[in-house]
Length: 322
Ligand code: UDP
Ligand code: MG
Image 1 (cartoon, rainbow, N blue to C red):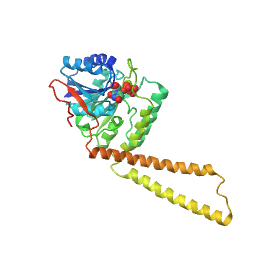
Image 2: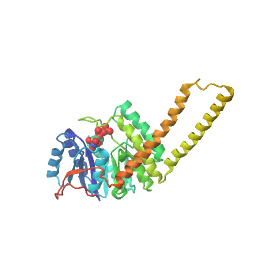
Image 3: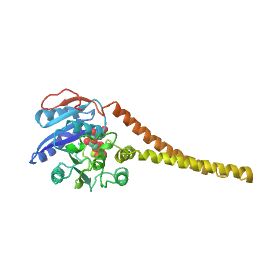
Image 4: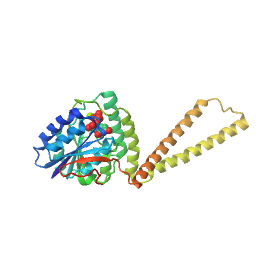
């Protein structure tokens, strides 16, 4: 079995050396062969030259360098495209994931699982802006997709390659792969993994990612349901609320005309009701716009990333393999 370790990174110059040494120390103890695929997601520091150095001294290292920053999900998609392994392991470059957990994941793959996801049970991030939003997001994702996991956000995961070959990834979607894959009928499990504080550099994300994750969730839900149900639900809501609104307006007009009941007593109530329905409208419009944008991207066959160059044992030009 060939194991491909896929590592997206952005400006991680201080971490790469330590990461490589620790990871390599684990990989050489495996009975399986391995390759390490680093995706440089448009770093502005010395990350790329450090990676090139590693690649020159180790034939098992592949470096894919992006033209600009396309985000962690796109970088992961590139890693899947370039990986040749039967099993793919994904992890962060900042040493927060512990390479010593890799054999645990592989054991679960050998036991017959198609996807194994890490659960950072002792997560070393701040509570209020990282762990709390993540707890809420995990509950929400589990509820919406029906696939219960403690930790969707953990990058340390293992996949059988054929399971993810045809999964298209957008936005913040890499974290939803287990849910998407479960829709395909695959077997998955969760294992507790170690989590460590970031040693060097700083996190590339803030609270805004949680919002993007939740918006992506709507689209994932749509993709998973294999039907037009979400749009029909909004359509039905429109018909019902429009009908009620019309009835209320009719009643109030009649009351005013024939019984002199004033309309202007509770203007705030009108505002509240209006806002609620405007809210629904914007959410549904947003969902439609999102799906539309994705359909457009797919119809144009647009790449989610552009590669500047690839460094590996056999020199290959800078074209994406897909
Ligand atoms: N990363 C990336 N592209 C980005 C942002 C982040 O490849 O646009 C990489 C980053 O270098 C790291 C991983 O994704 O290897 C996770 O990022 P980070 O540690 O900042 O996230 P956190 O652990 O704080 O959730
Ligand atoms: Mg991190």
